[in-house]
Amino acid sequence: MPQKTNRAWKLVARPTGLFKPTDFAWVEEPVPDLADGQVLVRQILLSLDPTNRGWANATPTYLPPIPLGSVMRGLGVGVVEASRHAGFAPGDHVQGLLGWQTYSVGDGRGLTRFERVPGVPLEAYPAVFGHIGATAYFGLLEVGRAKAGETLVVSGAAGAVGSLVGQIGKIVGCRVVGIAGTDEKCRWLTGELGFDAAVNYKAGPLMPRLRQQCPSGIDVHFENVGGEVLDAALALINLRARVVLCGLIAQYADAVPPPGPRYLGNLLIRRARMEGFIVLDYAARFGEAFTALGAWMADGRLRYRVDVVDGLEQAPVAVNRLFEGANTGKLIVKVSDEPAG
Ligand SMILES: NC(=O)c1ccc[n+]([C@@H]2O[C@H](COP(=O)([O-])OP(=O)(O)OC[C@H]3O[C@@H](n4cnc5c(N)ncnc54)[C@H](OP(=O)(O)O)[C@@H]3O)[C@@H](O)[C@H]2O)c1
Image 1 (cartoon, protein in one colour):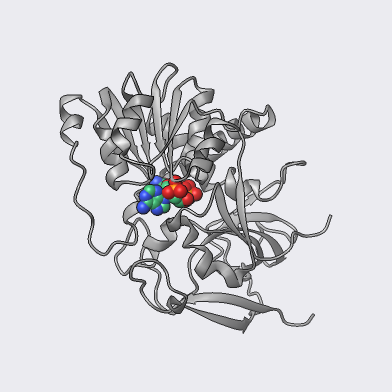
Image 2 (tube, rainbow, N blue to C red):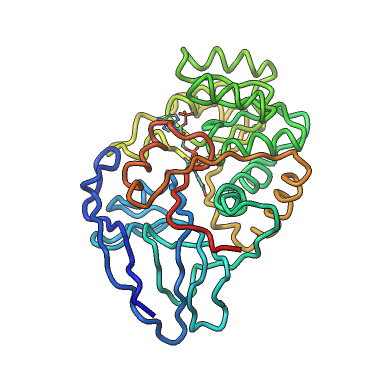
């Protein structure tokens, strides 16, 4: 068999601000032969995530920094092409930290096999049946403890996590208000996705317009953004509200954190709970989330949208779409073709 070539982006500089193409180097290297216990995966879909930016910093996040000169870390979906590992066979579909590259060789740690469900496109796995769906599901229902009749506000609402959070909120009976950065995104939320209201945070002062859409205040706030958006929401929280700190994308590219929210005092006087979480803490229970999400998708109550960029070469530029608000739904790079059949 001719030797395969791995094409990869290596991280070669610590970014300041948004990623720049010069933070990465393109390399083409032969794929090594497999040793006993190893598995070779060809990546099909690479997930681009806001957390990629934090991973590239010199300071640790919930994972250690990516060493300079190594392949850029990234989650992806792929197919096993060869295996000398008892747990994987050629043709298996897997998800995991496949990196910004076409081929990865590893000992199977961090890889999860999954069965393709007939009729479910492969892109649904990074968009729903992976870290994104689990974040929305456990973040809203376990951390946020959202209940019927409550008002839920979600920021970054037209993004991958936010669009699922709002729909799950509707399924459990909340009044759902989304915050997003364009009128078109807001129309998608209140139209196709069935949110009760959506507010464009770029179209004027947010707090008065959010207050108008939350006449009974906010019981659960699901935060994906931080900064002024979190500030506006904290001003409106109710007694015993829950504030789910899922992400702070507004500050991931800042060298110095922005001044804190002004309404933290409301957490105190309203006996509210603000709780950060990392979806990895729920890894043992992902199956539970995927069963529920799959059932909701099958009966038409849960939809997703993907924003697909063609070609691994595009990744360093495409990742910034997340920070510019240029994506709607899950941002994915198509790295290679799905196996035939
Ligand atoms: N805690 C966890 O375990 C966990 C797991 C997964 C994701 N997350 C976090 O969840 C959040 C959403 O992730 P995602 O993958 O679903 O990304 P996403 O929402 O699909 O994409 C990011 C979106 O954030 C908005 N945004 C970017 N910069 C902004 C700014 N300065 N102010 C306000 N909005 C801004 C943009 O939409 P607009 O057009 O609306 O501005 C953009 O489309 C991120 O903060 C991510 O880090 C956390």
